[in-house]
Length: 72
Image (tube, rainbow, N blue to C red):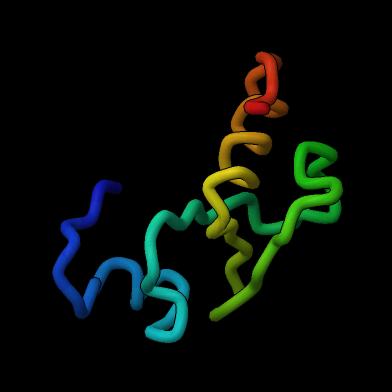
């Protein structure tokens, strides 16, 4: 879901809490330990959800998941 810039970001707060409403954020699979695409990335957890907030980590994760070249 795309979220507008102004705060508070209700959709982000509902998903990963008010302390994590900075964007970008990508909420990921419920069990990141089972997902090899997350190896070595800074996976955060809040409200029972796992997510990435680093542009670089989000790019690496999506590249791994979709079998394309990682950003460099």
